[in-house]
Length: 293
Image (cartoon, rainbow, N blue to C red):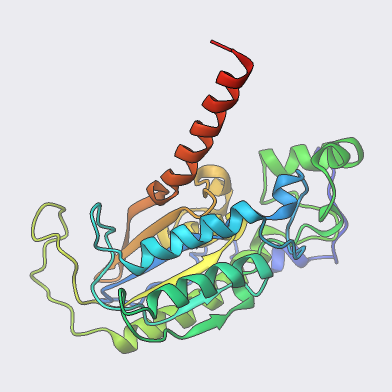
């Protein structure tokens, strides 16, 4: 049996529906809206190979450049190649309160307020429901140290993340509960701003796919919490936690049509191509300098 961190008696079980009991409905029926997810840029701890969780590691220099490129892309979402995002500005930009997400969200809001974009301020809301998964005693430690001290627990986390988690950290059911609460708030805002849905609108791509007028919101968050977020939106079991990876400053788009979700885009990162080209040029220059073939 996989080793478990200690928890208060009964805590995990109290956060999950009883066997056979369906999870509460998340998406309002008949809602037409879009939720866009943006992961933050590279942080300093990522460059050092440290576990982050809710540790407040700032963006690295590269991470700020990634965030600026993502902000420029979202400020002009219909420039070719267009993102499947509705016309008009987002209803709100929600973000985890940690520094790496706050800075990323602020750069997006500033870019959207420019005359070349929507030309207006967007509500920017720090939402603790989208904090990264708390990693307890692992936060700030190098991966090698965690393998050495908690190898069995880490192995359990990677194989069965619903049943194993970091010592002193959060379980996935706990994270799911707070994520769903924040998503319900965001979805209610979208429903309040949504026009009456067109019952004859096609749900098949290829039929009048241009940007619609339904409301949308942007969430700036983290890899782990976004895994839980996407599973919640798509009504997929928490046990599939490792199914969807999230790239640094990658863009994911979930459309909601008549209260039903569909994944339109996942991990779009073409806006980071200038950094990749720059890296390739630097690598080629170094090879020429060394005389390497």
